[in-house]
Image (tube, rainbow, N blue to C red; front, side, top):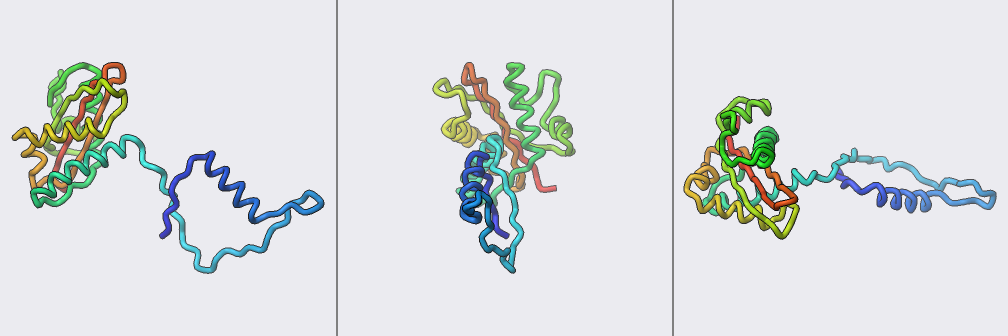
Length: 192
């Protein structure tokens, strides 16, 4: 299968007009005349794959950092789990919005409660982190790398990251653009 990357509309229109002009020519009467063209006999389906969202890029980068550290210990890589990521993102945003920093919400909701709200029962492990990046108002790779480094230097957080039973990974991050405060959440679970 051939993969065609997503192009911005302006670039797609430019490419379309170039392709259109190369297939059709303007006759002296002002009408378009089609050039000889036939579909290839061995046409393969083309999959439309849109670009990842910023959240997906951040999740993938965070997963790559975690798997880099796991590989150093000879552990199998984890894979992104959309429900864990949804629960992690929800918690990061809640901590930022309501100005607290804890594994439990002010109402006592736990990581298991957040995962259940996302649609799955289970007992995930969780790492939370907070950083301050006054130089930027957007999520920066260096900030995510610093959070990962601090988690690896903490015995409890490292234990979650290096647990060989965890195969699924979720990540959420929220930033306050006015202050540069960043809340990050990693969630881990076994394959179900």
